[in-house]
Amino acid sequence: MGYPSLGALPRQGGVSFRLWAPVARHVDVAAESGEGVHPMRDVGQGFFEAVVPRMAAGALYRYRVDNGRAYPDPASRFQPDGVHGPSMVVDPGRYVWHDGGWRGRAQEDLVFYELHVGTFTPEGTFAGVRRRLPYLKDLGVTAVELMPVAEFPGRWNWGYDGAALFAPSRAYGSPDDLRLLVDEAHRLELAVFLDVVYNHFGPDGAYAVALSPYFLSKSHTTPWGPGINLDGEMADAVRGFFIENALYWLTEYHLDGLRLDAIHSLADDSPVHFLQALAEAVHALEGPRRYVIAEDHRNLNTVILPRQEGGYGFDGAWNDDYHHQLRRLLANDTDGYFLDFTDSTEDLAAILQRGWLYTGQHAGYFGGRRGTDPNGIPLMRFVDFIQNHDQVGNRPTGERITGTISVEAFRAASALLLFAPQLPLLFMGQEWAAGTPFCFFTDHHPDLGRLVSEGRKREFRRFAGFRGEVPDPQDPSTFSRSRLDWNELESEPHAGIHRLYQDLLRRRREWEGTLVVTHPAEGSLMLRRGRHALIVALRGDLTLPMPRGAVPIVHTEDPRYASDPHPPQIVAGTVFMRRPAAVLVRVPDA
Image (cartoon, rainbow, N blue to C red; front, side, top):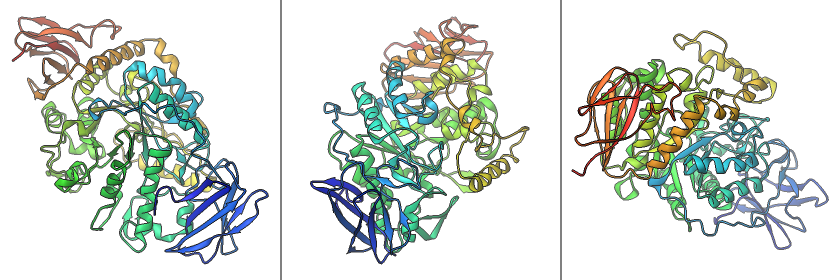
């Protein structure tokens, strides 16, 4: 099967259709307007094909199965009336691209900015994001990472309840609105990544499962129910569906990479793991280098080792250990997986130096040995973060870390994140310490919505010290309160923190060389990269040594960044920090 193969594609004189429906005996293309009903030909292995003459882009259709119910296309390229409505024929070749000179971004240059299209701007659309791209360029990030945009049920959703996995959500705009966003990003030399969800289907509107029960595994389970069938009967077609989806986003939308959600829930006992097959297909694409990044809480080196070393060949992985250790240290969180971490900067130094904290040790919350040896894996394969959508939105009230720790500690932690060679990820609004929450929100039909709301409340009853009401995911105000307030940028301390991020991201291009991390005292770290070093105090009242001959460049208590500065005191080769801070210095050649 070549690519593209699934769904509806305009061709000269009509539209070709291809569907996988292995339990169907007969399938028709049922057009919504004057094109009528057209039988599809059974071409074997559960696939049906048809060419409908005189049909064109913009036509609406469904698939009628066994002369009964009509379904939307599981590979629909647009659902103008939502997941339950008819599918629309889209011509991917109609858009005229202007990014022919785009050569992509080198991996070591990636600085991710994760955003949710519906809450990043007041408009909540692809067009709204596009208008803010010059702001992101000026900030200094190099890669926009969109939370999932595949069509979901209702008016708003995080996107992880994806139903029509090939259709950009009508809540955000048209397919060409997404193309315009990517085209403009490339003009500004910004890469664009997309979160995709291949570990489960959403609970409403996932017609791929309705048309083929073989999508679901009979032997593997996930937190959401049966796993995806990657190794059982008819698994080749299932694997092909998801790999085609990955290639679709990267080619028809010129995206630069994908972040795969929770790959630890993708069980596959095949000789060639689905993830390896997907990575190989992505990396075989012509043109700029495309990247695949994993979310995997197992710290599994197999994911990011190259194929010739027995790995799947992914380009990188989100690094939960960095976030969990730093949050435990700064905010003293002890619920759930934070129990497996400490408030020690020595452990944080180990993570920075080697990538993970857990490399095979016993982890109590995990329930056994966790992690593998990251030795030899370049640090740029690890994506580190202080915040992301999960670590904010999966807290009871969606509060950001800046609602829990001091602003000076946040500035110091931000300098640490941006100085290290690991790839940093910012979550929208982090660069100005946004005061708005990012809550979990849904817009399901009443029966399903009630179950989601009740489940959310049950989930947080066990959180130590939490008292109060969990925002109802179904309440429209939960969604609206999660929108960024861009007016905050005009006031302190937000404006100062924004200037700090701009300056650090500009300087990041100058920091080169092998990372060396030392631990001068509990609560502190010293990072050195070539001729630059960063001295970090994550606690106050610390006197720390300066490298011999060091010349201070900037610190996080500068009045440009802090409205109530407490500058570090540098005397005779030492620096005294009254409260958390970071000092960047230039050091002589060794």
